[in-house]
Amino acid sequence: MNRKSAKSYEIGKFAYRELYYFCLQYYEYKREIDRIANSIGNTDYNAIRGGAKNISDPTAVKALKIALLESKCELIEQTALATDPYIYQALLKNVTTGVSYEQMKACDVEILCGRRQFYEKRRIFFYLLNLRKR
Image (cartoon, rainbow, N blue to C red):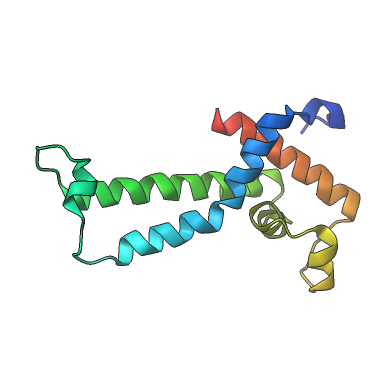
């Protein structure tokens, strides 16, 4: 990979915030997938149809919702993996929970790089996520 300066990874303040809050919803997406997948019966057909008079397939609607949520989770996971396969788990934890490098080190999370390198990888992660999300 051609080495870029830190400036070349900059994205706009509001684009960064959007991506940051998108990542913070990662565990909400996971919980929603579990909730939908584990719901048996008790389907609110009016909510699924949106009040429309036509009959819809509630199983298909659930499958579509799960597929959408899984694609969001996969986007975050694959971007972290593409950023650096050696520290992607620590990177994923950082961007999805907001836990800092220092807090992870204090909890004995193995991070195979220094603080400066970790935050450089984090900038690259958001740069790649910005590209992939568009």
